[in-house]
Length: 252
Image (cartoon, rainbow, N blue to C red; front, side, top):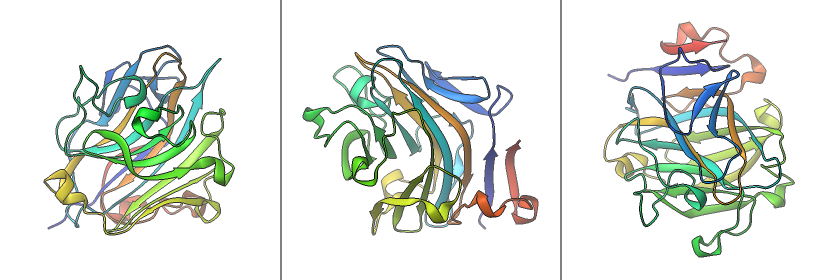
């Protein structure tokens, strides 16, 4: 029997069941993955492991803002992994997700990265791209050049992101909560999330990092549904959430 779970965080505070690690903190009603300081790394997860019983299907929606005072680097990820709510990879180019010489990456995992610094040794295409990462590697298996759609994720704008998985994985981005006006930037067919995780459950959350250059990585709002159910808050989809199943957490 599947367990319907829905997370709805319209804002953040320290009473929420979110585990922060490294340099990540909750402050000023948002989740701060890294401050605008060099060589920082942080992660944050919903404290309990989330069942993904329907072939791993899920939908999530979040708003982020990246602010850099004088520079840009390095980016952040949305991640699902089965290991621990303390999982955290290396700083700099590894986005708090990947593996360096000293620090292990996050194994058996899936991530969507938003990368703001070009690292040629990791085959980055530029300093403004999104990608799909697996098994703690930031060498993406699918990449989108965000310059091609007129988006610079490090320009201080609040960006809205939708990630949906039903065997195919799709990532959309926009500047408002209107899903219909968003842009599809990543579309990966026949993606097998349960095999990648090694189970039908995972810790869900975010990682981020800075390197020699830096920026703030803020998550302002976050929804997660443990089934495929594309989220559109512009049509008040979740006004009557309680009729849909178990609400693990709802905060306005």
